[in-house]
Length: 236
Image 1: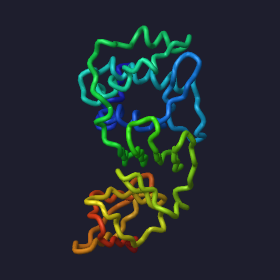
Image 2: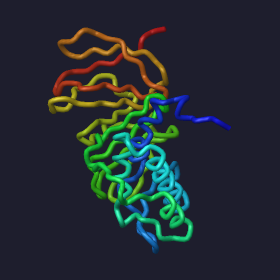
Image 3: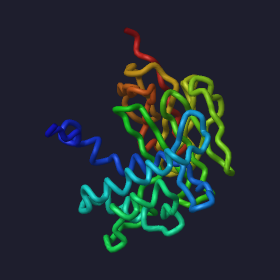
Image 4: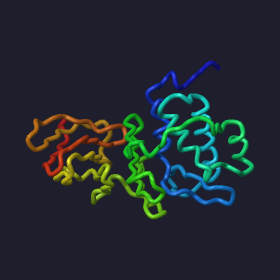
């Protein structure tokens, strides 16, 4: 058909390998043939067929473009023998596409926060270890993965901040607060009306206008610790 989707949205596909990594729950699922990494889903339940296809997609991404830093990180994610697919469905993909001689980069260097503004999706990890805490906002649902269990949350009803140190998630009722006493804070306010303008006031700074993204997420980057922050919807 002579159609390459990557040419239509090159910025998205450049980041897609990192997006893919971050959209998986931290803890692997131990199956009879091998361990699987489980992608986030609205149900929160492990789907092994989807896990096979997810790894097959990773193998194909690396085979298609092995030189970009993003796919080299993905190769580092792939080359762990615990996750080599040995089942009847998955082994064919390993045989045809896996390349153990392709050098990869450690995914431990990937930032622990990924915000995809175009899709309105957000993923945060506390670390790259299997016992990490993970927060994801996708398909209009907010989830937290902790201690091997998925908890589904309503973004519009979040009352207490979810603080993963790397970033903080707050609910839509947050209008005035003090940033945590760290040098800088990345703060995401979720459950807002998408593409809405807000007035942002931060102590000792001029008032600015900010806009919530497609998923109703307002991203406040690098807020100084301890300052007072006020957010007011702009009147239309």
